[in-house]
Length: 233
Image 1 (cartoon, one colour):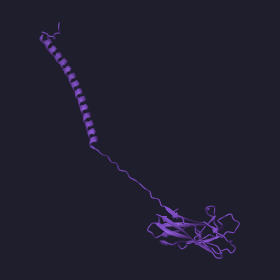
Image 2 (image 1 turned 60 degrees about the vertical axis):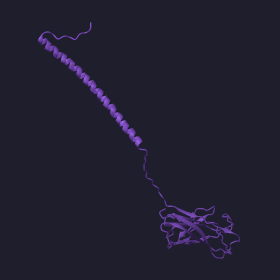
Image 3 (image 1 turned 135 degrees about the vertical axis):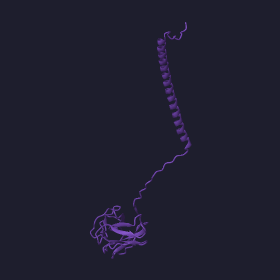
Image 4 (image 1 turned 90 degrees about the vertical axis):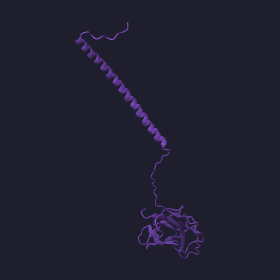
């Protein structure tokens, strides 16, 4: 037989107790049902919120069709100095070499600085360009620097002397000597260009070798080096 709903007791007092119990049971059922509905609603709300946020992100990504980023670039320009070699070997017809031999050796100096200092090194003159020859060499004596083109403030001690025979670095196997200022005794002599913060001009190293009366006939060969440097080097 099908289950029938319980009938209330016949006694009035028992009936009241029965109704109260029934109401309590029905209330608990309703509370459980309400909690389930709240949890379900919260889950639904959370899902809808996530979907909305995702849609906003996707829409923002597709709405911006380009992107850009800036960067800072630092370029350090260091001071530079360069010297161009003479186009050809310097040839001098010395004749009988009874007087000093003076030779102007041209160099072109370029720099992005207005103040430079120069050092001169020179070798003796050797017969047939052979530093090992037994033939006496013609000794290097003095030198100075001349500016033939452009404007340069020449220092007072522009003269170099090789009198103390201080050895320098060899040039192609030729032993050299360092010229020193006749005033300060220093190897480097400072110069100031008038070219608005730069050097771009030819200078001549005017080098002299001592006279020699016993020089043999033939071609004598020597080497000259000009070194340009920044003042703080």
